[in-house]
Length: 122
Picture 1 (cartoon, rainbow, N blue to C red):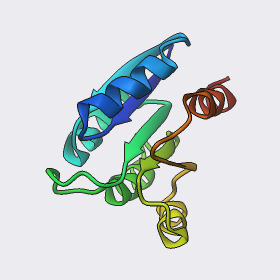
Picture 2: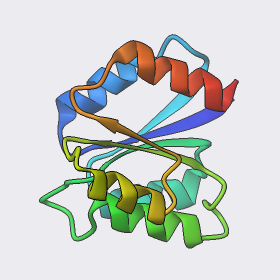
Picture 3: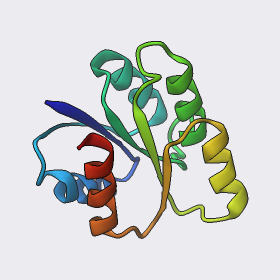
Picture 4: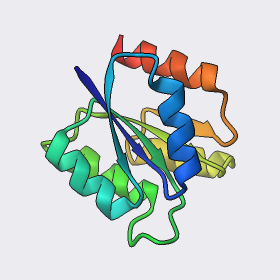
């Protein structure tokens, strides 16, 4: 079974993503901070990670988490989709630079999200 990690400091966003993707046959993991995301990803090695960029209660933001996971042998093959309110071209470019496989701005379309999950995980 494919594993998906949802990382966001807001419970409602994690719940929305969870509800959107639960249609598929996936094991869903969650983390509420960047630090927790790194720990959970290393332990469970998810196939796909939805990663918030701005997590004020975390010592790591989403860009830093993405860079750490892409450089780690255990997690480097995970697909990472950034979920963020940051919609400037420079933010999108930074996401690409740290290895993100996609970038969704909030509010996002549940249909687009599910379509991307199916495209990545089959």
